Image (tube, rainbow, N blue to C red; front, side, top):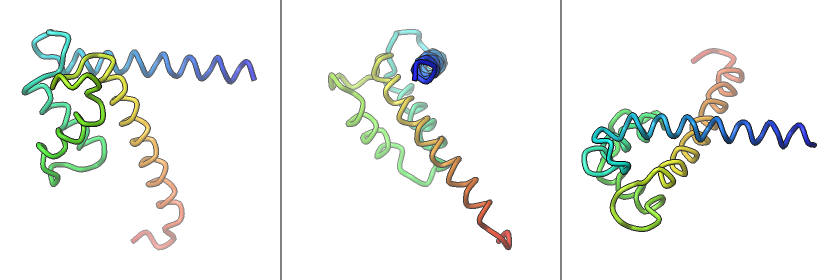
Length: 111
């Protein structure tokens, strides 16, 4: 039980480090917030993470993202808000990856 807790804590710490790195990558002006054109990049990342290249409207995606994660409703994302989004998206990517792998495993004829 203790080992599982330690491993879970390490995984969470790794996720936070990855989220911080992604945040810094997206924060082009180093303001400490993701806003304006940076939010467009966030939406592109969210869409591509879900396997959607650009068929969904980016403004619609931005509105969905902001309604879910902009806790203080200031129209920009701080690091904590982005970490929440990052966690949601990486979980979604993991689920999609496992689903694709299972599909390929079960797809006997490869079509």
